[in-house]
Length: 442
Image (cartoon, rainbow, N blue to C red; front, side, top):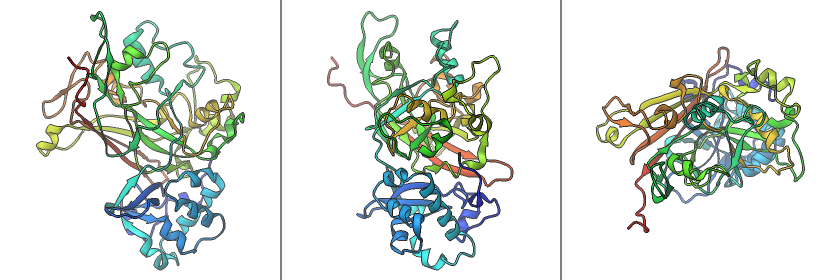
């Protein structure tokens, strides 16, 4: 696991002065995205956020002012996706982070040379950060698993394997898109208990899931396993992830093989990937209740126990069409924290590769819905509405159990720690459009 180094120094400031002013992206963060100037025909390329500005990494690479591993990484970041940069691994990417940190610090001798590589964030548009070859969604919040389990199995909400094995399923990468995604309400088979047979119709119980997305960096070959103490060497970084879910379609289809069409119609990621190195100051101990089984040997280590958890604060908001029409602000639905996960990032990577499964740069691991121990920390409407049984009111008088057409969901994440700079992930937004006309409707 990456340790704290000079790039995390809370006293560092940048000659990009907006980064010194209560920003998600101070010099201690330096997250990556794929960007291009807005309304241009330029090729996409890597960018690094600093305050409200973006460093154009392709333009910076052409200046040849970095050397060695840092320049190698910079050239990889000039490509149209970050896959090559991700695959270079921890050492090379750390060298680039250090070089960027030093070059962007107040008093840097490179300020004048880099000035024309700086773009206003308002003047860039984002692309997918990488080619996502494979996507796996986990189920790491025991609070979410218990809440959902109680809706279907009140006397036995957790299945017996939950505390022994990180539960996950392989999802669909083709419908993952960048923040700002607008998608049509899915159509599918649903069947309520009072129906004699299912219907094919628009989803009525559309939901979001407040998650984090973990991107694989260093690759493995078929048959190779990953030791838990080296697992984070294979992680490039983390983004915010909204895994939209059609709960009525899910309820009908998920037995016996699990999620399928209820989960693969849309998923949305934030554009900025915060690197694992940037997250070093916000680590916490990983613990389990004493009555719970300890993780098996391949999922356990002293390092993982000492600092496997990440303290990432999460927020979820809604903005309805009526709010936009009336000029009203979005409304917070819940807050939570990634540290409530029952499994750490290292455990997810180790378990995923434990059977020799090939891990490739750009593969995405969803954390699963990040609900906390209290009702106010629910990461989905399924929990907030008690399975759709209890509508809740918004400040403008609207009520919700599940999402309606025109609803926009906004998710944010940030890290705060005494003695460390506060950093953020930006936000991810997505909007529900009406269902496309059903050609099979009678």
